[in-house]
Length: 168
Image (tube, rainbow, N blue to C red):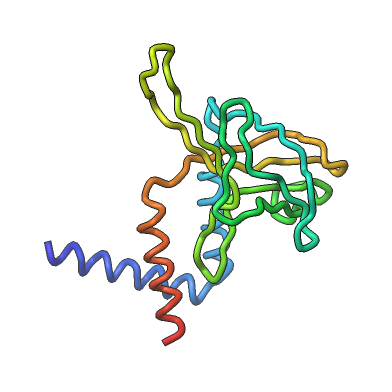
Protein backbone atom coordinates (compact mmCIF):
# COMPACT_ATOMS: atom_id res chain seq x y z
CA UNK A 1 0.00 0.00 0.00
CA UNK A 2 2.85 2.38 0.77
CA UNK A 3 4.20 1.98 -2.76
CA UNK A 4 0.86 3.16 -4.14
CA UNK A 5 1.14 6.43 -2.21
CA UNK A 6 4.78 6.88 -3.22
CA UNK A 7 3.84 6.38 -6.89
CA UNK A 8 0.90 8.73 -6.55
CA UNK A 9 3.02 11.47 -4.99
CA UNK A 10 5.75 10.98 -7.60
CA UNK A 11 3.16 11.19 -10.37
CA UNK A 12 1.74 14.40 -8.97
CA UNK A 13 5.24 15.86 -8.71
CA UNK A 14 6.02 14.95 -12.33
CA UNK A 15 2.76 16.52 -13.51
CA UNK A 16 3.58 19.64 -11.46
CA UNK A 17 7.04 19.91 -13.02
CA UNK A 18 5.64 19.47 -16.53
CA UNK A 19 2.91 22.06 -15.88
CA UNK A 20 5.49 24.50 -14.47
CA UNK A 21 7.83 24.01 -17.42
CA UNK A 22 5.05 24.28 -20.00
CA UNK A 23 2.21 26.55 -18.80
CA UNK A 24 0.43 26.33 -22.19
CA UNK A 25 0.12 22.56 -21.78
CA UNK A 26 -1.56 23.12 -18.40
CA UNK A 27 -3.95 25.65 -19.96
CA UNK A 28 -4.84 23.15 -22.70
CA UNK A 29 -5.55 20.46 -20.10
CA UNK A 30 -7.76 22.85 -18.11
CA UNK A 31 -9.75 23.72 -21.25
CA UNK A 32 -10.32 20.01 -21.95
CA UNK A 33 -11.40 19.34 -18.36
CA UNK A 34 -13.84 22.27 -18.47
CA UNK A 35 -15.17 20.97 -21.80
CA UNK A 36 -15.84 17.58 -20.24
CA UNK A 37 -17.57 19.19 -17.26
CA UNK A 38 -19.82 21.40 -19.41
CA UNK A 39 -21.94 18.58 -20.76
CA UNK A 40 -25.64 19.28 -21.09
CA UNK A 41 -27.57 16.44 -19.42
CA UNK A 42 -30.84 15.48 -21.10
CA UNK A 43 -32.88 16.88 -18.22
CA UNK A 44 -31.11 20.25 -18.06
CA UNK A 45 -33.96 22.76 -17.75
CA UNK A 46 -34.00 25.95 -19.77
CA UNK A 47 -34.11 28.65 -17.07
CA UNK A 48 -35.41 31.67 -18.94
CA UNK A 49 -34.89 34.47 -16.42
CA UNK A 50 -34.02 37.97 -17.56
CA UNK A 51 -30.92 39.97 -16.81
CA UNK A 52 -32.26 42.48 -14.32
CA UNK A 53 -29.68 44.78 -12.85
CA UNK A 54 -26.08 45.77 -12.81
CA UNK A 55 -23.85 45.33 -9.80
CA UNK A 56 -20.34 46.79 -9.84
CA UNK A 57 -20.89 47.46 -13.58
CA UNK A 58 -21.62 43.77 -14.29
CA UNK A 59 -25.05 42.56 -15.43
CA UNK A 60 -26.69 40.14 -12.99
CA UNK A 61 -29.57 37.70 -12.71
CA UNK A 62 -31.51 37.24 -9.50
CA UNK A 63 -31.90 34.14 -7.34
CA UNK A 64 -35.50 32.91 -7.47
CA UNK A 65 -37.65 29.91 -8.30
CA UNK A 66 -38.44 29.24 -11.95
CA UNK A 67 -40.66 26.38 -13.09
CA UNK A 68 -40.01 24.48 -9.85
CA UNK A 69 -36.23 24.98 -9.96
CA UNK A 70 -34.58 27.11 -7.27
CA UNK A 71 -31.85 29.29 -8.73
CA UNK A 72 -29.15 29.82 -6.12
CA UNK A 73 -25.68 31.28 -5.74
CA UNK A 74 -22.82 30.99 -3.30
CA UNK A 75 -21.63 34.40 -4.44
CA UNK A 76 -24.65 36.71 -4.55
CA UNK A 77 -25.49 38.30 -6.93
CA UNK A 78 -25.23 35.93 -9.89
CA UNK A 79 -22.91 37.82 -12.20
CA UNK A 80 -22.65 37.84 -15.96
CA UNK A 81 -19.69 38.49 -18.22
CA UNK A 82 -19.16 39.09 -21.92
CA UNK A 83 -17.94 36.14 -23.96
CA UNK A 84 -14.16 35.89 -23.75
CA UNK A 85 -13.33 32.19 -23.92
CA UNK A 86 -12.78 29.88 -26.86
CA UNK A 87 -16.09 28.87 -28.42
CA UNK A 88 -18.00 31.80 -26.93
CA UNK A 89 -19.53 34.77 -28.75
CA UNK A 90 -17.93 38.10 -27.75
CA UNK A 91 -21.31 39.85 -28.10
CA UNK A 92 -23.11 37.41 -25.76
CA UNK A 93 -23.45 37.42 -21.98
CA UNK A 94 -22.62 34.34 -19.89
CA UNK A 95 -24.22 34.29 -16.44
CA UNK A 96 -23.43 31.84 -13.68
CA UNK A 97 -21.02 28.95 -13.86
CA UNK A 98 -17.97 28.76 -11.65
CA UNK A 99 -15.38 31.39 -10.85
CA UNK A 100 -12.17 31.38 -8.88
CA UNK A 101 -11.54 33.77 -6.00
CA UNK A 102 -8.00 33.57 -4.59
CA UNK A 103 -7.66 30.10 -6.09
CA UNK A 104 -10.86 28.79 -4.47
CA UNK A 105 -13.70 27.75 -6.79
CA UNK A 106 -17.00 29.51 -6.09
CA UNK A 107 -20.24 28.46 -7.72
CA UNK A 108 -21.77 31.59 -9.21
CA UNK A 109 -25.08 29.91 -10.10
CA UNK A 110 -26.73 26.55 -9.63
CA UNK A 111 -30.25 25.17 -9.74
CA UNK A 112 -31.89 22.63 -7.51
CA UNK A 113 -35.19 20.75 -7.57
CA UNK A 114 -36.52 17.94 -5.41
CA UNK A 115 -39.22 15.77 -6.95
CA UNK A 116 -42.23 15.17 -4.71
CA UNK A 117 -44.82 12.61 -5.79
CA UNK A 118 -48.59 13.14 -5.64
CA UNK A 119 -48.75 11.18 -2.37
CA UNK A 120 -46.09 13.46 -0.79
CA UNK A 121 -43.13 11.10 -1.02
CA UNK A 122 -39.83 12.90 -1.42
CA UNK A 123 -37.95 11.74 -4.47
CA UNK A 124 -34.59 12.45 -6.05
CA UNK A 125 -33.02 15.90 -5.83
CA UNK A 126 -31.40 17.25 -8.98
CA UNK A 127 -28.68 19.86 -8.68
CA UNK A 128 -26.74 21.43 -11.57
CA UNK A 129 -24.27 24.24 -12.04
CA UNK A 130 -25.69 26.45 -14.79
CA UNK A 131 -24.51 28.93 -17.38
CA UNK A 132 -27.33 31.08 -18.75
CA UNK A 133 -26.47 32.55 -22.13
CA UNK A 134 -27.97 35.80 -23.45
CA UNK A 135 -27.55 37.57 -26.79
CA UNK A 136 -26.23 41.10 -27.35
CA UNK A 137 -29.71 42.49 -26.50
CA UNK A 138 -29.73 40.54 -23.19
CA UNK A 139 -32.40 38.15 -24.53
CA UNK A 140 -32.25 34.58 -23.23
CA UNK A 141 -30.62 32.07 -25.62
CA UNK A 142 -30.12 28.86 -23.59
CA UNK A 143 -29.11 27.27 -20.30
CA UNK A 144 -26.15 24.91 -20.17
CA UNK A 145 -25.67 22.58 -17.20
CA UNK A 146 -23.04 20.47 -15.57
CA UNK A 147 -23.34 18.14 -12.61
CA UNK A 148 -22.92 19.73 -9.21
CA UNK A 149 -19.79 18.24 -7.59
CA UNK A 150 -20.74 16.00 -4.67
CA UNK A 151 -17.37 16.42 -2.95
CA UNK A 152 -17.23 20.20 -3.30
CA UNK A 153 -16.36 20.94 0.32
CA UNK A 154 -13.40 18.54 0.30
CA UNK A 155 -12.13 20.06 -2.95
CA UNK A 156 -12.42 23.55 -1.47
CA UNK A 157 -10.52 22.55 1.65
CA UNK A 158 -7.68 21.24 -0.52
CA UNK A 159 -7.69 24.41 -2.65
CA UNK A 160 -7.65 26.58 0.48
CA UNK A 161 -4.76 24.60 1.93
CA UNK A 162 -2.78 25.01 -1.32
CA UNK A 163 -3.46 28.74 -1.32
CA UNK A 164 -2.34 29.07 2.31
CA UNK A 165 0.89 27.18 1.55
CA UNK A 166 1.71 29.75 -1.14
CA UNK A 167 1.71 32.47 1.50
CA UNK A 168 4.07 30.67 3.91
